[in-house]
Image 1: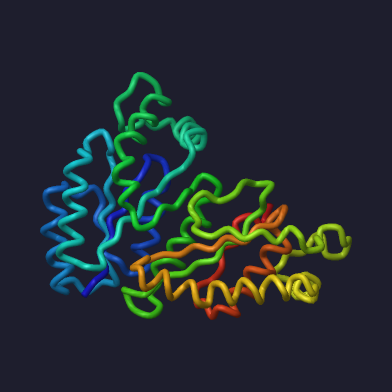
Image 2 (image 1 turned 180 degrees about the horizontal axis):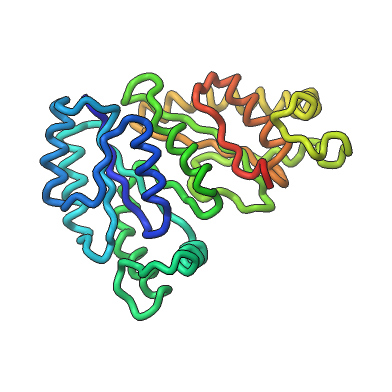
Length: 281
């Protein structure tokens, strides 16, 4: 039985990138199929008639999408396929404005100004976002990082019904990620940035990792967090949560949070790669 995913969200938030990433993962991706046909194709996926890793419906053109009709489609898919999920792509208004101004495309939602179009679309899609199983905010990540996030999230691990756990490192100076479930702060640890020979390196380098992890406070922190998540993750799975995102933050997102995130992945035996949002800044 193929997995079923409905992808929608704000125009300019990255649907085309997600579509390409899923296609590369072996999904059968259908872009802008009329809503009345989605349920029919969903029946084929539920019956196991399609030999793909999954079936993804990319729903856009918000000016032509009726919220009630889309909610009904989501209900139909979830009735036919117990594991059907909704992915909603979002980004702050200022980021969407900058993207539309850069590519000079016309916003699909009718409005007298670009700001009005974005505002109208956001209001239209709010009930869909509220129903989403996973929300990804693309405002602070680039195309390659979004692609990596999709690959990490939708690469098969232990079956289609397993809880997918991801870890993200970030820098507080670049903003707290909006789309994570748990945020942990490691700024209390000594900062390798102030060690001249370590400053140009990152938490992926052994010398930086050793400097961070050899601190007694780091071991205490990792021990407590590992114990917390070791029992909490199964409880999230019992409640039917499909995706759990854990963010580790330091000041710049290059040294401490990267080293801690990598060590936490090892301790929790998470098989997906960790996404380091700000490591190149």
